[in-house]
Length: 477
Image (cartoon, rainbow, N blue to C red):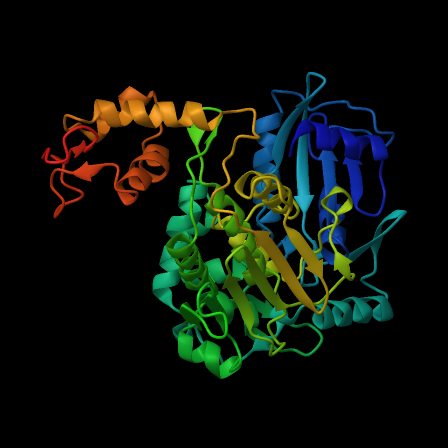
């Protein structure tokens, strides 16, 4: 979290969704009770290194590594928080003092802290373990609010795709080499991700709707939700029907891949530099749109999700469980997780940002991509995102780089590549150190745009591969 945002939270003081803990040299004993209460209520912000009055005390530098280690270990320990939770505390420096920030999501499950159930009100954390009515109400609220929590006791591990689970391990390892999921077996990973649950009210236990949607075999998904699909449509010439279409009826991980492939196939991606790094405006915008469609949809509603690319806009719409109605104003937007388990899963595998930050990015990048126009986010029983598309627009409004500066860099690169150059030579010429970023954001787009060519086109991954341009001599090989 940006320090300015955390300063604002501290200034506003403690409340229903904000709690301060001093934790100067060790973790306060009641931190985990607050984590439990936030999970069971509306989520919230916990700031370690601040006293009850909002004074910034800071955490001792020598104690910081152990405090962070203890937090991560405890939150993933079912004897302390059950079901366990995987969250990495964020280190923030304010006024020269070190704080730890925990952003606790609202959970779709009822959690216990050391065997006790805590709820939250304005006065703090409440132990409701011995209050049957309060506990029953908590379970009812969770079950009625989050359909992703539905348990399917006859679904077995073999009904899920083990190849996808293995892919998840690779994805979380790419985000965090020390991620606990990377070394867990399949059952442990699914339990840690809260995809296997025990309903203490009904006695049911098993894999949930979230597990089936994320990792289920296609036939299992269709058996559980026959209406489930995402319709990707291109409609520019044939406005009555479509010019291209992908009828997607598979798990959410591969649904994301296919939707982003549809975006790449049909939408432009103008060259844009942010500071000295090329970023894909198109991917930044539609990553947020596609992710929103998949993780915030009300899946028990039969309304089919649609992603429609038109002549001057893209419209995404899906069934929703609204927290309001009308157009969302990003300046006073309060995000609500519609499927917290699915949302958290997407965040862990690197497919989603913290709740709320993606909306800000969507607005910022759409204004550049569209030449100044804002996207529209419309809350209702059907949630709709409208992104204006103006392919001719240029990113001249941003202060980081001008189109002329961008064109000059690319022109210099193509001039340099009149003679075939290796990837290492081109990367060094551009002054870029990150190999993955260079390949994804510079090299591959230039190849796709027909500006760079491969000396060994039949073996793109050859160690002897070089790249050249036709800038002066169209017959150059």
